[in-house]
Image 1 (cartoon, rainbow, N blue to C red):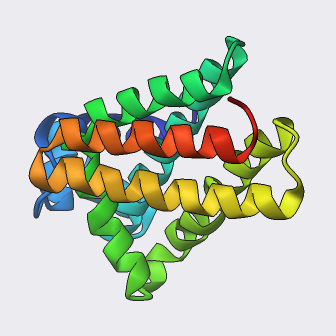
Image 2: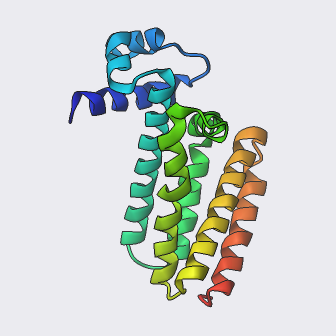
Amino acid sequence: MSAREELLSRAVAWFAEHGVGDTSLRTLATGIGTSHRMLNYHFGSREGLLAAVVEAVERAEQETLRALLAEGGDPFEAGARFWTHVADRAAVFAPLFFELSTHAMRGAPHADPLRAWLREGWREALAAGYRDLGVDDAQARDLALRSLAMARGLLFEVAATGDRAAADAAMAAWTAQVRREVGAG
């Protein structure tokens, strides 16, 4: 593991435990046993570090989904288990995700990699999953975009209101709708 990857791993763990808020690089550096200069060297800025944190968390989430799908069985059940995993972690990672997504929405240069990741990181992975179910490419891409919108909206619902039961019910209804739409049940 490179020095950058090691620092990133420690930063993710620290933010997961303490939250982000207005944490400075100096505070974070002290908390993870490094210097703020090393964080600046590897990530360019606080915002660059936060974008790297979100990307690392998002990539880890994709790996979790891939592992659930690799277990075989019903891909919709794997998706339901994945939603549970994501919703369980909403209190920790959703505020960071949405805070940095705001930077991407406003066109902040440090958020360019995050913007690209938000645009394509999940969409293509989900579209591939739908294609694996026999859905044509255009419908697979459309379902991927709608599924992302649903999941991100429900993640926001859980994080902002704490109404996990309503979000879980909405996700179950969405899953049933998609299952019918692709003819998988």
